[in-house]
Amino acid sequence: MTIEQAVALAPASRAIDLIGGDLTEKSLRLHLEGLPGVDAVGLEARAAGLGTRSIKTTSKAWALDTIIRLIDLTTLEGADTPGKVQSLVAKAMTPDPSDLTTPRVAAVCVYGDMVPYAVKALGPNSGVNVAAVATAFPSGRASLPVKLADTRDAVAAGADEIDMVIDRGAFLSGRYGMVFDQIVAVKEACRRDDGTYAHLKVILETGELNTYDNVRRASWLAILAGGDFIKTSTGKVAPAATLPVTLLMLQVVRDWHRLTGERIGVKPAGGIRSSKDAIKYLVTVAETVGEEWLDPRLFRFGASSLLNDVLLQRQKMTTGRYSGPDYVTID
Amino acid sequence: MTHLAIPKTYKLYIGGAFPRSESGRTYEVTTSKGAFIANAAKASRKDARDAVVAARAAFSGWSGTTGYNRGQVLYRIAELLEGRRAQFVDELRSTDGLTEAAATKQVDSAIDAWVWYAGWADKYLQVAGNGNPVSGPYFNISTPEPTGVVAVIAPATHGLLGLVSVIAPVILSGNTVVVVASESSPLSAISLSEVLATSDVPAGVVNVLTGSAAEIAPWLASHADVNALDLAGAEALEWVDLQIAAADTLKRVLPPESGLPALTVDRVTFFTETKTVWHTKALI
Image (cartoon, rainbow over all chains, first blue to last red; front, side, top):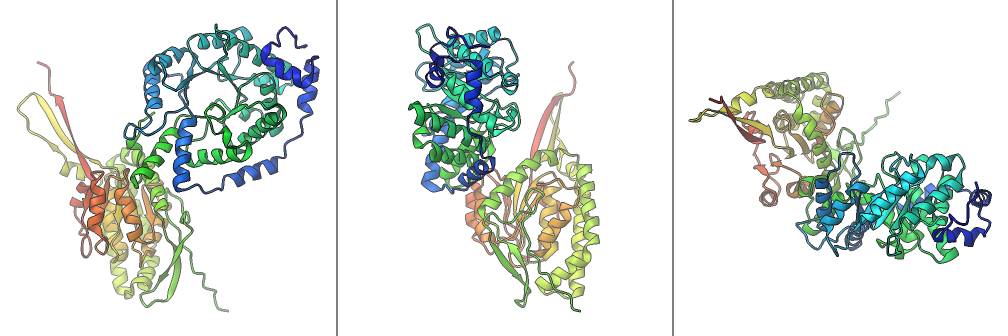
């Protein structure tokens, strides 16, 4: 399959700049498969090493607040209702009603059809974005027109961010061009009437990619195709986000920044439930791409139960006694 | 050839597992004359926190079983205790300096106490519950329900018997418990946790912390996820402060007792909440 220049619109300019005008399936494959292999043992050792830092007292207080600011508070259940989305939004706006100094989360993440309810509940100027999962989330098994319609619907309903899934089947069978084209097309579908784009997060579903080499290739591919964020997982597949995989994706982002000066975001999602784990991710971000990335525009946690644990820790720090699950909302 | 003595290094009992203290600390357990017996883990506040999390997780399952079932599970522990009598007797002789006769008598009383409380598991409800008389076409029924996670400061003396007298009445109604064992003679508590680990009691129903009660108790007393506090062995601590800390989250608090806590069904009902239900008798 040849990637037509006509398809490769503005978002694909990154790939053309890097690989050259003759962007074909073959040149893309040569580029991606020419990426150096990942030293799995070294990567895991590095991630484990970063996980041993002891973060206490004022640093911990700062870390907890930072984590809250970076959370995409998520509900992605078949049983979601407008009412549930409304209570999720209430929690996003006021995470801890007993302590109004608690910052707001970065965004709420919902299914596309729930976007209107989330937008309405948030109201104007809330400072909280609405992220929608699209493109036949979580499997991605639908035809391209369906995926694009899914995306356009969510954007038209007012989603600020789109979380798309890549076609893992195509990726694993080596059809990189097809994955590339789909990301480019979805990015185009994120365009609003006024010419601005909804932020595009590309979910790699690393749990299905099997090897670190594949994660590196998929990250690189997603960035080349115009993704603003690369995201580890849907949260529906185990293993979801792990520290080594996130570290690897951060390394790709760092390399891209060195190469082009562009800043790409990273979002680990799924499986991060405790503050302790989340703090390990903060350390990894700061040590890999720099503290500049500890910003909602460049780093997010996709999580639902993490927020409660952070709030319990925060209450422990402010009151000096251990808190319990009776003192936070039930999700 | 002489046998090489292998002194044990005991660990905590949290959520059905035997972890070391998160702090990595241990302390020496000695005989009443000061000779070394074993090392025991010295629990920190984070171990107490982990124990409360484990106890909370076990609560819904344990309180959801029938009283009859809990009685059977508790009775089974008495059987296991019976099989380990010699070990408990040995430990009491070494840590508390008891004579063989006194130690045996205490272990026997402990097993008897355990069986006595096991019998209450499906009976305390009938004693403490009630059908209330009302002047209307209603049933009005009050029944006791377990309060939740109970933190217990075990008696400093009376070894196994003291321990049984505080643990059994708490868990038989469906509560889960975090016990701070006697600092000077924790061996009975540790051996009891080994018994519990191989019994039918679900993981997390009983959690045993060894170490300094003075250090751990304040964290349990102020913990928002602990529902009640039994200060049975806290006479030597600043227990009024513990009561004050517990008041913040409206815990039930049993004050310290000098001597052995008596066997009484009051200890069972103290750690329960009364639920009262109205229901129409008929629609006429």
